[in-house]
Image (cartoon, rainbow, N blue to C red; front, side, top):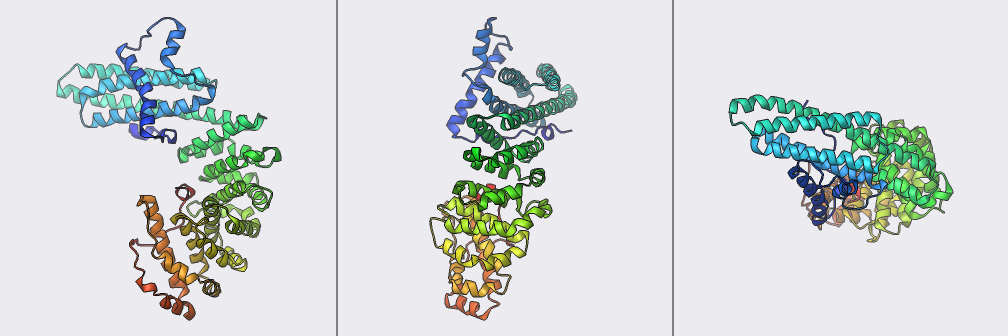
Length: 480
């Protein structure tokens, strides 16, 4: 087994900060580790307080144990990856110092985590001992390696080092996985049993941060009962202030099939429908509920066909989302609501008929002319997706013609990126593609075709070109 495949911990979003601040944060860990390398892991003093001062430069609370674990894990993962790279290139001289540094980081991670967390289990302790044993073995074998210059001996030892590295990677992965499971369980228990709004809010934000680290962690969070706990919060009026953050976390966790499966089990659709249709709820809360709807109806997911409860409540949901688009006070709210509607038009064909009955064309085209509500290529992408799917129905042509929609669609053919970022350029491409597709479909109607000619649609030459019209982006891209 390749050691790279045994390392599930990638660069953490917790580290996505200003580069100078990131360097300053990491410097403590790296310099502390280098000091330990020089001292051969011997403490400066036998006094316990002195050792603690050496280990921890700042007063961290138990709440930060998860962040510390993730940060250390990312550093160790990076160090192991570098060792593998040096090994592949036969850079013999650097490997011993790097393995020694990794050994120190592992010991620091284990010590720090056990200092700040009471979640360690007997199984975790077994993996801690195994990981330290394998790290010590790696340090010993690379030390012998550094003392020889015989290429044949080095080549023979390379196989042994690869085996030890793989064992280190596997033990490290298992330990981090167990630690994360324990941390998630602790956070879910906090949500279930705690009465402090502040503590619950902290736990929700910790779950959200974890959910941003990728599919594997979203699956883990869903499996440990977080979806049940978050919906329990959203069903209690006394926790209304927590609804937005709880729903935002649900949207992130439901990016995986396990999250949607758990949502179905607890009648989550019914809860979301009640929130969306309740005008006493804040706009922020309804927008986050729309984000959950957008996520669970994403065309990129495979589990959506089982959402039978959604079909039962679809008309109410569509009505509420369209109203949210119409009354949105800012671009973010309109973006989330229109993204949900766009995904629903892919989810079920009846949705398009319902939208036409609700005069959705007028609402959406008016939103396009409002720079406060539709202020980005991402929002226009969602709205033109809805129009493209509505244009399949013959009755949509009259509505679009009546609301001067042809002119709006032709205007979208000139969509340009302002920042030239890859994400925005991609969004612009989708707007161009879908507006062209929509016009092509609508031009079945002679009146639409004539209107397009009158507005000189052929002069709107797109700057971008891609081979096909893509599906709406997941929420992660929408938020950029």
